[in-house]
Length: 237
Image (cartoon, rainbow, N blue to C red; front, side, top):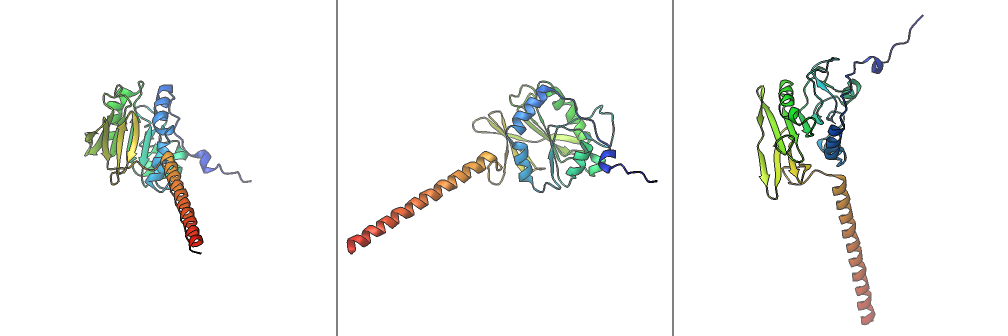
């Protein structure tokens, strides 16, 4: 007699779900989901089979049921990763992925603000995550509106944040090769070579509408020239 094998997907270790807190969900949704920024970033960064853009699941060194001291960033980016393994494990297991995430971001909320600044900073450094960024719509929870750290040795070193005109803050992420920007309380991702925001739904729609307008104008101009040509021919005949 033979027995059916348990499918691998059913026997695989899965991390527990992070606890839900309405305040955390609201702030991360406002800056990442409602704006479509997580999707735009995933499309901009490349191959979805090896580039993971995700968040709100635990990052741990190895499989464990004890989440003490573990954190779940609002956003993480990992290049050369296995997104399918991340989904199957319900989180990022560094031993499974073979490397830590390249980038993590926390969006400030009243519930997590202080932890983002101190406890999580130490924890992400201990996990050897190359960059840790913090975004705060008002600056009241983190004490600053935009901050980033780059791992040097075993410690984080602050990334310079520039203040541009009109109260815009911006810092460069070497991990993503993008500028993160705080502008009017909204998070933005900018190409350092062009100075333009990465493609978005609204931007692409605006460009398509502009192209259509130019095409309509060109077509109207052709009709005008054809009409003028007919008038010239009629008058000369």
